[in-house]
Image (cartoon, rainbow, N blue to C red; front, side, top):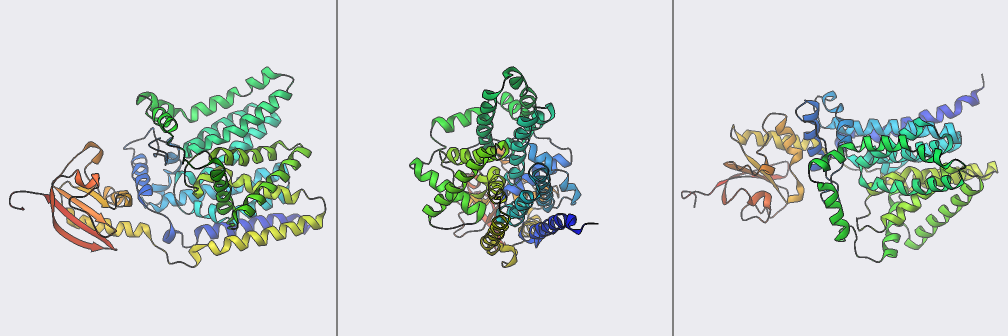
Length: 488
């Protein structure tokens, strides 16, 4: 028995254990549970209890363009598994993230060797951003893995030209778009590589026919979006078209400034590097040029595809005016890690290779470890907070219908409504303009504008006065009733 054969397996197990620990330490105390998560919990509860199976997903952050429902069905089994505690949805994100890490390692090792696979796994294990994504439920959080496997199955199809790879590529691509619309940018490097391969192909008809399964899988997986648009007078298509034609996707900044911000955002969120913008742009540019040269020299379609993915995403995303938040880069994080791993592992001299690996590991840990907030901060317990507020609210609602609103408006109320709904005490449907005889306003910020409010969610109740007020968990709660001659 050669002990050296067990060293890679031991390292993998250690990295996976560390990765799981970093993603589960004080898990429930730090998991994010705000209005978006409350909205998702309500929808998933209805799926899990067979009350309603939606054909559309959450609205994206771009206007009111809706995503597909795939994410809801993916996480739905975890809610009843955790006895309808919404933390189950966060555990769903954790589970799929860990499985994603393991699968990424497996396919890279299978096709590109143990060192490159271990290096990529190391970067995924300690990445602050991927750790954060695994610790709460949100549709963009799984995009890193679906983005990677979209590119993986496409590169596999380029190499093998088989039906399964084609079908998987199209299907995973369709699912990735349901997680976030920015996944459409994956189509750019795919199209470039396909055209390049088609140009060099001797049987172009066969090459074209080979994409039919991919197209079928893609259309099948985005069919909920297509059917929704058909049934609702193409509301998604019209809204997206309006955003584009009205300039709603652009910030108005010079393109070079937005491109610079995009590159800096990738370095900040992907590597946690904060430095002089010129240095960051220069380092990222040099890294991509080096990898392009290596990919061309060694004829690696897989690496070239990932380099093109990062390049075309940054060029394309720079046209958009969105803030450079971490989740907007989801589909290229693993591509960035693969690029770094490839540069180091392709060094011929063992000394250079292992010194490079050690230097990279130390530098990556140096930038990431200080940002593990769950080690130094006090847990906020957002789920227990929402439940405590909801249970207190129940005492004052009675058996009468009611309306509910929050101040400020962007605070949202769905995280509280979820706990009211599972107790069969949900509020009147605001979307149907149902007005009851009592309104509860939850306020987290002074001054609390609960009468003559600029908020439509409050003012829609009509002229009203405060009949009661109390505080729970730093939330001021106001009970309002309609004005009557006796109350004036």
